[in-house]
Image (cartoon, rainbow, N blue to C red; front, side):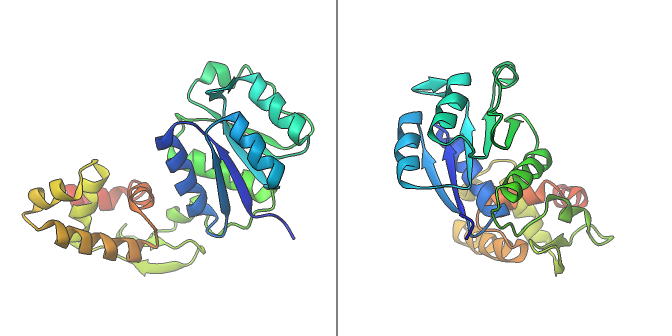
Length: 223
């Protein structure tokens, strides 16, 4: 039976959380392991057999080509998605020629990142439940969101929920959104719970990612 384990090697907490959230969004049944160093990754790989490794190239104890070579020594045929915020470094390395490999700049947008991640997960044999291009199949009013299984669920946000999402996507906290809309923080929490249910997402990061893919919804919320 194919492994559903994925190892994320990233020492920056914000990026690590973002990658983990996106993987969970694409593959809801994935078992995600996280390491903040190559030493910790070695320890996890000695006890687990992930289907895919997603790694940054700049770690506290290893950098650049050494990251790739170290992982190849541990497992020569382990599929690897290589990421970096330094494009010069990203394009200077040589991926392991004995295993499927992908490179991805951290500066890429949501759609490109999702597409490459989806390809890597699929090639690695991990079951996925969502398609990045599903969001293009919207109804003409621009307010319906296609669900993870590629079926139109007729999900629609109310005007107030659109306003909440507009401010959420702007980076405001619940208390700040409450002040903007003259509502209580508890009311904002209630709106968010309903929004997450309607959008079929688990958290704020996933909701914002979907919201930013719906231009007409953005425009109506900001009006």
